[in-house]
Amino acid sequence: MAVSIGVVESPQVVELEVREPYRIWVRFDDGAAGVVDLSDSASLGGIFSQWSNQDFWRSGHIVANSGAVAWGDGPEIDVCPLSLYLDVTDQTLEDLRAETTTTGTD
Image (cartoon, rainbow, N blue to C red; front, side, top):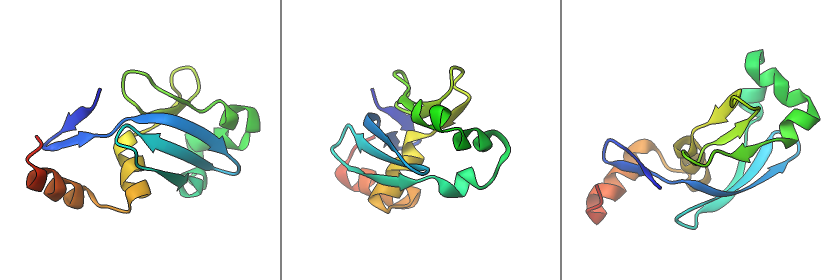
């Protein structure tokens, strides 16, 4: 189920491969797919320092009701599917809004 953010429907992650180090491969419900490098987040420390534990890193999974990618039981860390989508497609939120407006989807 896509989540609407303003006039933008957030694509949902439907497939995930956790790779090493700090990289994930994701496929979205619209078919877009690619590798996302999360090393910038990992370098922030804090909660992201948990990713240095390889067992924790490998526990990455898709959250069923949001399409987010998460780690931990809480989830302790989750990454918004829209931010992953923008990274994979090399778009900005404004690009996606313009595309949505042009195609008439809202």
